[in-house]
Every structure is written in C-alpha cells, then in structure tokens.
Image (tube, rainbow, N blue to C red; front, side, top):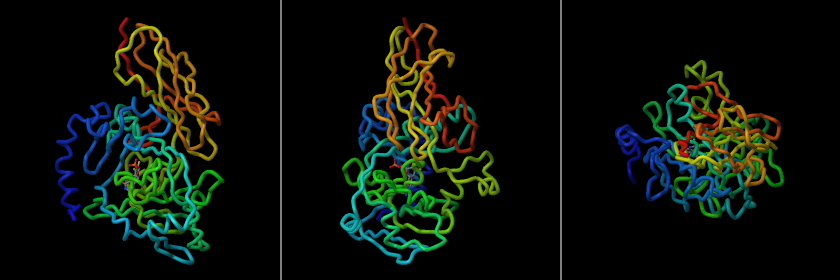
Length: 388
Ligand code: MTE
C-alpha cells in the first residue's frame, strides 16, 4: 500500500507550484470537466454553466472536497462500528447494512461551507481552497436511516450528539487524525415519512459511491453543511457532547481571530445559509444589448420546511429587480433552479442575483468577513461586457 504520509508531504510541497494561477475561473480539466483546485487531496468543482443543466447533478459533475488522499477500503472486510452511550454496540459490514435495513432514498443538496470563498477573498484575504460557486450539487442519496442504526444499538440516557469518524488520515499539527463531524441527536432522530434526519448512504444517483465521494459509505445530513456528511465512514459514536474532532472543535466555525478562546466559544456550523447564484452567463462574458436569458441556482437555509420562494435579478446595481421563473419545484433541503429574461443596455456592467425564502428571509447584500471565508452568501454579482 502507498505511504499516505509521504504522499501528503509531497502534495503540500508541490501545492504552491500546482496551484499557481488556479482559480474558480480556471479552465476545466479536459478529462473530468472539473476545475481542479488540488489533485491530492482532490478538490474540484464544475464550471457553473454545466452545473445548472439539470436539477440532479450527474456524479461526474459533483464537486469533490477532501482533506486527505482517498483511503483504500476493501468493501468485503470493511466494518462500520456503532458505539458510545448505547446498550448494544455493534459492527456491521456493507453487505449486512444493505440486507438488514430498509433502503431509503432521498434527494438533497450538498454544499461546502467554503462555497463562494473566492468572493469572500475579494473583501479581505481568507485562507482555504479558493472555491467559486460550484462547491454545491443535488443528488439522490440512498442508504439506511441513521436512526435505524441507533435504534438497533439502543440509545442510553444522557446521549445528546452523534459523532462520525472517517477512515481517512488528515495531517494535523504534525500527526494524523480522521476527518470527523457530529450532529445533535435530535437532528439524527428527526425523520419524517419521506426525509431522514440523516442517512448512512451507500449510493449516489443509483450508483455505488465512488472513491472520491466516500466509498463504501458516508453520512448525508440534509440541510447541513457538507462537512457534516462524513465520507469513508468508519465509526458512529453516541455521546453526551459534540465531537472533539478538529473539524468540529477547531474548524468550520465563524471566527475572526481564530484564537483558542474564540474557537471554544463559537458554535459549530450546521445549517446552510440562504443563497443564489447566476451560473449563465459566466462572469466576464461578452453579451449583446437587448434580451438576455440568465439562469442559476438558489438554496434555502436547510431549516426544516424552508424552501426558496423568489429569486430576483438586477442590472442597475439593485435599484430595480426582475423576478426569475423557477424551472424546478420547491423541495425542502434541495436547491431550486431558475431562469430570467433580462434587458441588457450599453451601460449594464453586472447582473445581481438575490433570493427570498418561504419565511421571508432575504439573501443579504453583504456579509460579515470571517477568517476562513465560510458561508459566503452576499448578493451574487456577475460582471458582463456589453457590445451593441
Ligand atoms: N469526509 C471525510 N472523511 N473527509 C473529508 O475530507 N470533507 C467534507 C465532507 N466529508 C470530508 C468528508 C466536506 S468539507 C464536504 S463539503 C463534503 O464531504 C464534500 O463531499 P463530496 O466530496 O462528496 O462533494
């Protein structure tokens, strides 16, 4: 087996060279069609124009966000362990997961908390993968309800959170740690008839998960940032507190200084933020005066029951707005695609998009800067060059 430490070291050694000049506007890789931010670990996103061709994002166009190289997992010997504050801890194989529990399929959007980070950097520099607005996708996930696994284990009194540990190895402070996450037990048990609070998933759009997306199993937590949907899931631990893993305790928090005190007092990020993005035309496109069809996506907060109710576009800096028409239904935890016909004038220089959700919540004009550039959801501005 390859030595992951060596690979990681090499990756970080060469990263600045590889990354020189790469951005969300870089040309996609001709083989995969994705814009590659880093090869190892793999971090890549689709060009926005291809992203909104369909409501369900094809697997090959789904963004990939990994903190470490893909771990090698043998599906035959692989076991998921369920432990912690439970009556009957157990281990289970992939085959048993598929045969012993009811299969549940659900369509849900996944998005990285760092989506649109490159725009955050325009306000003031932030660190992290310089994502454009393509770190988002909508897929049909299938697997087992997390609550069914927890019921088999028997949750004991005092349990409040459910931790997820991946089997990947991320370099952290000179050592190796798994990528980890946790969600409140209430969220894990908040199933409705059609929507699980969380899923232990083995299929994506009818295919077994690919190695990049977490083969053989991952969690999918509808409405929560992608960081809580742990790929290459190895352990579920029921606890009385949130996970102590770095990616819960020390990252994915809205902080400005990043001191230990500030991190300790900031809650872990969970739900999405309201967002909308114009995907076509691409930023910097040449357009002609007259009628212009634009299209994009919008996402509600991920709180139960909230959906996108309205998307509006402006070509005059926000003085007047044109309503978009929806090309997909309002579904909880899913993005909504839209199109609009705009009138472009010689003086038009940018298209602004903003969304309104079913509770009246409006996408903000600006956001408060944070150190890691998470949750960027200011009005989306697409520059255009107009010719008569
Ligand atoms: N799980 C593990 N084990 N390791 C990771 O690096 N990245 C997380 C999450 N789960 C990650 C992980 C983050 S930050 C995101 S946004 C999603 O996976 C991305 O999932 P995808 O690559 O399938 O799109």
